[in-house]
Image 1 (tube, rainbow, N blue to C red):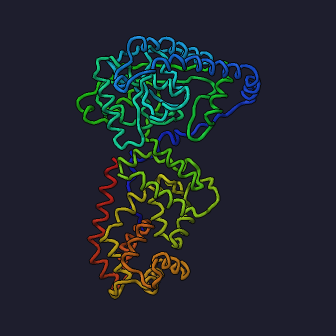
Image 2 (image 1 turned 135 degrees about the vertical axis):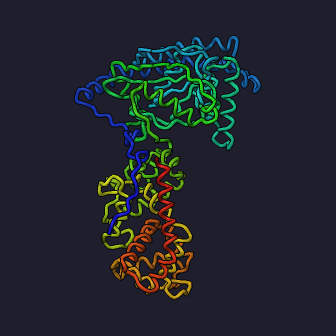
Image 3 (image 1 turned 90 degrees about the horizontal axis):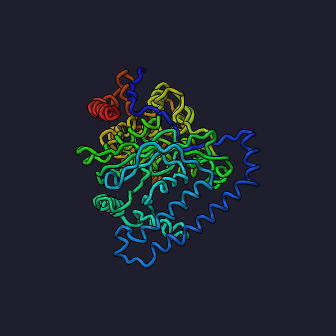
Length: 526
C-alpha cells in the first residue's frame, strides 16, 4: 500500500533551540570547593550588606511616595520627590557592587524618554536583570503586577519607580496598560522611561522567544537593550526547570565576581505598517536584538511554560510540553486549551501511571491505544504523525499530526459516511456484530479489542451505538479519522464489495474534499 505523504514544511520543523526554559548548572570540583568556602566567608557578608542597603533605601522611597493623593499618583514625580532618585539609584548601585556584580562594558547610548518612551530588554533570564533599573537617573518604570506594591520594603521601592500597574482581576487590564503607556509616551519626556521584558518569562538566553505585543501596541519608538552575562559559570539563570531562586542567589554570591554587559541599540521607530501590526513590530525588533546577541529566534512563549507544568502534573517530563506554542497557534490556529487537551490524550496513549522518563509514543503504544493490530495501514498512519522519521512521536509531532492528519477528516460528512459504513442496513445504530463485520474483515482485529472499542463507543450501555456516540468517539480519538482514508484505499484495491463499495462510491467526493482540506492546512505552514 502506498503512503500518502503529508509534506514536511520548514516552518514547522524542529526549532533550533529545543527548550529555552531549562538550565543545568554543572559544578566542577573546583566550583564546589569555592562555593563551600565562600558560603562561610564572603557570601554571608555580601548578603548582610545587601539587606542593610535595602533597609537604608526604604526610608527614601517611603518619604517620596508619602502623602500623595490619587490625583498626584497619575502625574510624574517632581520637585523634592524626584530628587530622591539620586540616593536611591546610588544605593541600588551599591547593592550591585556588594553582591559582586561588575557592569562592564555598557555599549551604546541610552536615549532620553522624549525619543524612546519604552525600553525593551532581552533576554530575560532571572532576578538580577533588575540591575537595568539603576543605570540612569531617574530610575526606569517597570510594568508590574498591582500586588507587588503590597510587598514589605520591595513594595515601597516599586511604588517609587512609578510602575505601570497590571491588575490581573481586571478583564480590561491589557487595554488599560496600553493606554497608560501611550499616555506617558505622549508626555514629551516628563515621565521616566518604561522598561519591559517582552519575552514575558525567564529563559536560558540561548535564543529569543516570541515577544509579547504589549510594548508594541502603542506604536511608539522603542529602544532595544541587549543583556549578556559572559561568565564561566552561569549562576544567574533562573528558568522553569533548573536551580531555584535561592540557589541562584546563593551561588552568585559565592562567585568572586559576576559580569554583566549592557548594549543599547539605536532607537527603533515603527513604520506605518508596524504601527498597524504590533506583531510585525515586535518581530522586527526581536530580529535586531537577536542579530546583536548572536542567538536564534524561536516561537516559544509563556504558554509553553504552562504546558510544562501541565506535563509534570501528568507525570510526564516537563520538556514534553515544549511545542513552540506561538508557531502552532499562528500556523495551525490551535488554542492553548486545545493543546492542553492534546497533552491529556498524549498521556492516555502512554498509558502508564508511573513517572515517564521519555515523552515519546512508540508504535506499540499507538497500536494498543487504538486497539488496532500492527499492519501496513496502521504503520502509515503512525508515520504521518512521526514527522522526523525517528520511529517515535513526540508531543509536538502529535499536536501537528492531529491538526493536519486527523482534524480535517473529523467533519460531519465523513463521520456520517463512516457511520453508514458500519450500519449496513440503515437501522440508525450500530451493533457489535456490525462493528465486527467491518473491523475484523479489514484489519484482523481480535474479538477482545473489538469488544473494547464497542464498550468505549457505547457510552449508554444500550448495546446500540448511536450517531451521537459515534461522533463523540471520533472527537475523543481523532486518530481514527485517518482510518477512513485507509478504507478508501482498500476499496480501490477491491477489498470491499456490495454495501461498502456503494458507500465508498457515494463518499469518494467527501474523501477528495478531505484531501483538499489537508492540502490547504499544510499550505499554512509555508
